[in-house]
Image (tube, rainbow, N blue to C red):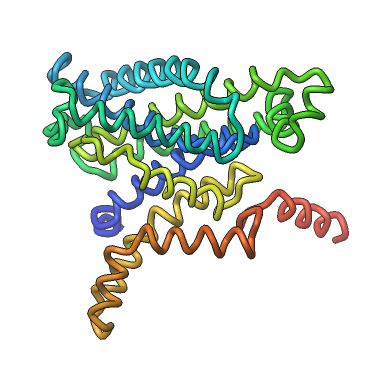
Length: 306
């Protein structure tokens, strides 16, 4: 068992962090907004933690990590409000393009600012834990708390307002729901969660650079939600875990031997192509994702019949 956690500890932590990133993208989608801004807030949270731990505190510990997570969440939330108010007047593909532009602006700034280390980034970030698997002590409780909050969110007034806007914004407005307020709220909550996850990831990876927040990352996170299921938070959790582990599975298949050279190379380097194909195939055959609310409804009906 010890050998298992030693070998697969980093992957397990990455899967939990992937689930949290999926949830950060699920929040705007819950309110009917196709936002791809999560990688930008994720990168921002990571830079905040990296700068604080290397240039301000010059050390780290679990209390300092929690403080960095708090600061990253607050800054990301404030920026989310500032970006969300004008951007969320757009809809559909136009909003997606605007949020992609936001991610690219942050990436270019990170590449050209001295405080972010430029293209090299920030390396040698202090780690509060001695082994990668120990990051589960922070990441796993955060995921469990987030899942409980999402479960409650889908059943209270705010969550029902999100869903009403997603289903029909005009009808929701006619019922007195302030769609602009709730869309900005969903966008901001997603930004806060992404920023907090970025703060954890910066210490976990021990280095941080502009590659953490790119358009490629937006496609990966979108895959988590669309294929996992965009109608329930469990879809984002399952999708985040599955598609974070998928590249490692493909890499293992490529290294087993016996495969043609071109196929092995494709399995190692063609992650985004495979994710793109999965989005196309998934949206055709599973338009609501693999995990849908209907699954639980059908199970409840069977239980009642029994």
